[in-house]
Every structure is written in C-alpha cells, then in structure tokens.
Length: 123
Image (cartoon, rainbow, N blue to C red):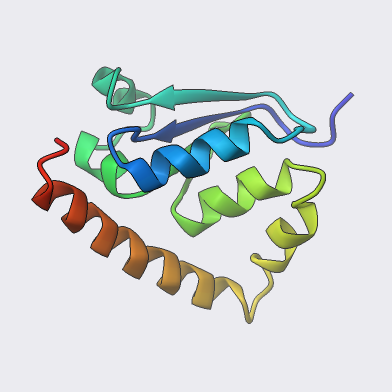
C-alpha cells in the first residue's frame, strides 16, 4: 500500500519548459499513482479543478485523493513528495520558513513563463 494518496496533475504541454519538467517527473518512480492530464490537448479537463484554462496554463494544478486542489509551488511540493528520491525536497519546500519563498519564486517564474509563452503564440 502507498503512503500517499492518488492524485491528478493538470499541466500545459504547450509550454516547452512545463512539458520537459512533467516528462521528467513522469519518468521518476512514484509511491503513488498519478494521472497526468495535459490541458493543451484536453482543455475541458480544467472543469475538474474549477478554474479557467488560463489558470492551468500559468500554474501547475493537482487534485489529490481527498479532492483538495493544490496550485503552483504547493502542487510541485506534492508531486516531489510522491517521488522517493525527491521526498526530502518535497518536505523541505513545505517548511514554514521555506514555503513562502517557494511560493513567491514559483509564482514569479510562472508569471514570466506564461507571458513568454503567450508572446511566442503557443496558445
């Protein structure tokens, strides 16, 4: 039995940086089952997390087994926490002094990346 709940990750493969990160994570061994949904190919899937398509284009979203929606740095921490080799990094990124910095850094990078992709006409 796994010690982590199953999860669904919503990502945007139209972004080459996002696609590369997701492909790398998909190749890692996991202690939980993760379903990966590419909103570029299935935009209607965003209804599962109750947000607009642009929100998932900008930030990674995860729906865990309890139905909680994790966004951005919290979603990344969840995914890393499900990977045996990255579990320590997932835990580190949720520490009280680290988590606010991780959220700020993720949000700033996501905003720049989103604008770059829009400027390139990827969607």
